[in-house]
Image 1 (cartoon, rainbow, N blue to C red):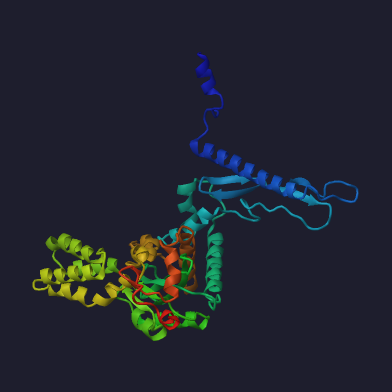
Image 2 (cartoon, rainbow, N blue to C red; image 1 turned 45 degrees about the horizontal axis):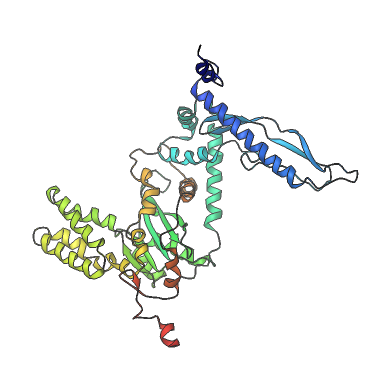
Length: 421
């Protein structure tokens, strides 16, 4: 055998090991290495702490019992070391990679509410995950999943009672999500969701509630609850579709908030009123409206659409002209924000899989379970949300600086600037 071939065989795993087992072994090795590095950092931190006899006060003291942690690679056995604190000050070692009592990785925990809303019952959850993680997927019996659902409900209730007296929002996206999941209240129940933008440009969950369809009464209850928990004012601009009772409720509770109708929903509504042969051209014509650089150009494109389709397809033209003002509200806000506030995409993308599913959960969900599942879905989604573009433009907005066609309008200063002059 040539030398280069001999060298190539060094380090190869023994014959007969499956790929899954090889991945698990690699995962265990990496996790164990990281835990040891965490321990080394703790020991280094207390290296100068000594007992009266001069010995190191914080030292290694064996390991905790081995335990399996369910990860995306399957169950991985880990050993977490212990330390002994001879000084009596109570120093303990807690790994951030494998915290005390953890049995599932966050990725696996995040998959559970998705599986449940996809129609997989509590008793089938372990079987479903075994397809993804292997037959060794342990610790996910029906009782464990039931306890998790109760925990999610408790987490939602605590979050839903949080104080909002210091909260401030620049934008809101609001939508009603019809999941198809059956609930105790009947098939009319849906999720009422609000996502907001804070003054530093970050997106965050504002409200997750349930209501009968998308009625004004249900939305009004949600908004009044936000106000009762200390929210001083609504956002400068709220984005939503036209089929909700949200707008009537918003006008009553936060009347100063301006409305921006979602162009994604409006495209669908208008195209549904046109024959298939006209839809491609009509879609391009509407895109010319909301992609125009200025309000004046948008109005020109608006009138062109009405002239082209109004006589033959009046229903389609009426759907567009009915919301003309609220469809163009975004022109009074920074151009960097336009791509964010023209649609309800932050909510649409989060619940896309749930919204389009066709199966139903076989068992009727309680209200608490229904909301707990939604809470966990959004909690996981929020981890990947990014700040909006042009976050530096937010403070001028809050200070009252007007914007015209996406840029500050120096010829129309806010009231406080006029007084100062």
